[in-house]
Amino acid sequence: MIETQPQSQNESGPAGLSVILLTNRPLEALRATLDGLFRAADRFTDSRREWGDGYRPLQEIFVVRHGPDSGKDEASGGHPLLRLASSPVSTKSGSRNWAALNAKGAYLYFLDDDVTVPEDFFNRWNGKVVQYPSLMVVGGPNLDPEENTPFQRSVGYILGSWWGAGRMSERYRGLPDDRWVDDRSLILCNLCFHRDVFHRMGLRFHDQLFYNEENLLLQELIARGVPLLHSPTLVVRHTRRGTWSGYGRQIWHSGKGRGQMTRYRPSTVRAVHLFPALFLLSLPLSFFMPAALKGPLALYAFLTAAHALVYGGRTGDWLGVLRVGVLTVGGHVVYGMGFLRGFIMGITDEGQP
Image 1: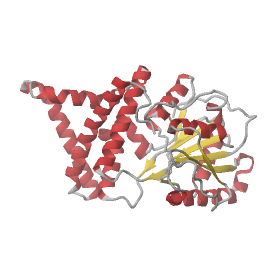
Image 2 (image 1 turned 30 degrees about the vertical axis):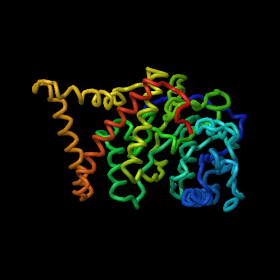
Image 3 (image 1 turned 135 degrees about the vertical axis):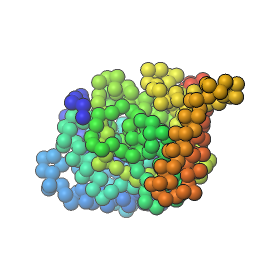
Image 4 (image 1 turned 120 degrees about the vertical axis):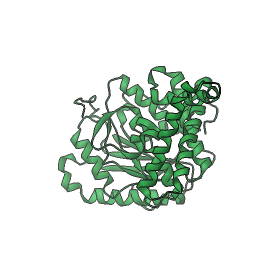
């Protein structure tokens, strides 16, 4: 692990943790997520004596409504830490910024509204804050839930594999131990910031970035010398896309966001981000290539087939081998299309909900 220390915290600020859930769904639709957080909160409170001076309380589970129904808040209930609010900002990024500035805690843990956490989740988080006293950013993997359908298992396998997602696969499969990483290994559905990022340092999620807004913020922090920690113990379970169209939209948005981010800050791009776009552009040219130059495409086909067969061997789902092969190729093509669209158009308010 890299031996480095983040910037010092602002000790004059509030203590404890705020969990932030951004949603445009009715509260009842968040029941599985909230029930898991309530159980983890109760267990964390019960174990506070074990931490002594190292215990940092859970201040709130802050559910922030945004979108056209953001004014229809249900009465808060179900747990004393539950806090409901409506964002006055229309964009997701802007609503997250608003939540960060209005949360109570010294640490702001952003979770998606459809993840579930283990019962000792907050104990694990507190352990990382004790282990790294000057920690500014920490996140963990989002793994498949056990009840996934065969299609969702295929999606999870692709996202968690090097051939499917490159270095970004670490977000979905995790790393073997704590490591200082860059933005490719962290994701906003499971990501904690110290409040100084938004208050003392004055940074924000980019309001008009269509997707990947956390990646740009993390790159801003890297540029300022702030290390980012990936801890595999901070695991959440996150349901994968269950349809072909849902998977396609996820990959398109991811590619488009990375293209916009590359246009905005070219230094953030990596080879893994360019590969799908280059692959897409090479497909029409392949029909005019002499046979001797078609080797790279043949190698791609071979590696994709091997990737799909490994899935069949691991899961016993041999009918899913073809599905994984098609999803992998389709994902690379759609990501490349999204990347080119985002890079050409740049950051606009188009498509920002």
